Image 1 (spheres, rainbow, N blue to C red):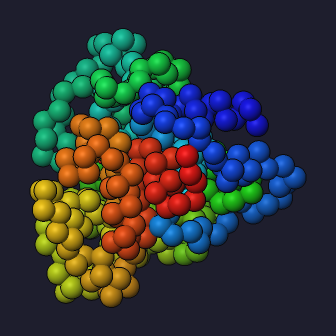
Image 2 (tube, rainbow, N blue to C red):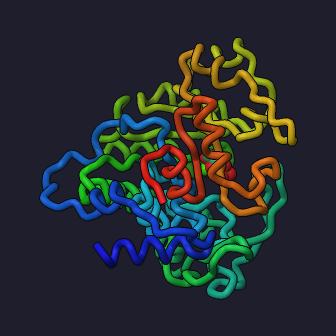
Length: 347
Ligand code: G3P
Ligand code: CA
């Protein structure tokens, strides 16, 4: 138990100094649970609300989309871990936020000659792309923190996980704590991937099916910014689908239309409270619930570079505001902070 507590406290230090000792009975009880052999840990949707979704893992504390980031997230109280998915040259799904990996790995050092230029969803991008590398080649890379103001102490330590490895990790972490750990995959650039002959959806559904997770009550949400992608998926799976939205008006009529192919929406915080200092709540949560949709919100981040000024540096206030608005789930880079806001843990 002392090891687990020390690890957790150490992980939190880079983001904020701790004013008082942290007590995490829920986390440690669960993380250290024994005698759970045979527990159907990755079986049913968690019933907690709002759910804590670890955005790219505990990405405020570890390089994003690494098994270490996902593991720490669960230790911090996350209900779900979020892998963004792209494809390798040989059609394997791996967890990266972009198919361009120059900013989050050491690929420039190991494959300097493989730099190229591509147009992805209308944007011209120079760099190194997962679809140009086999899984065996990607296995030689190590992840790096992308943001300069976050800790780089873990750079070079962790590899790029496959989606199958993320699913296996969620299962084993859930069994260890005796409580389900859900997985919340996002299809990144699905139209682009299909156009280059590496469609994401068949591989995604095959991996879920192999683990018995291709069903409506599985602890899985599939998310996408691409409406057409979700509509196709709706015809292929009963797994819950979340339509991601960054901006724009969400009328009751539009929400009812979304409800014909998705189970919920995943919205930018500014669609719920606006981006300015007035912070007038919108009716999106109420209207979405009336349409039968879940509402998940992204992305809560603790650092001043991200936190809107009206919270005056109090990142917990933002979490509490989202909860007061009635959201069903919160994506956070710091799962501990989000779990704290739910009242499940205290410092
Ligand atoms: O998936 C929800 C949120 O993560 C969308 O933003 O760009 O971090 O994938 P992004
Ligand atoms: Ca995402």
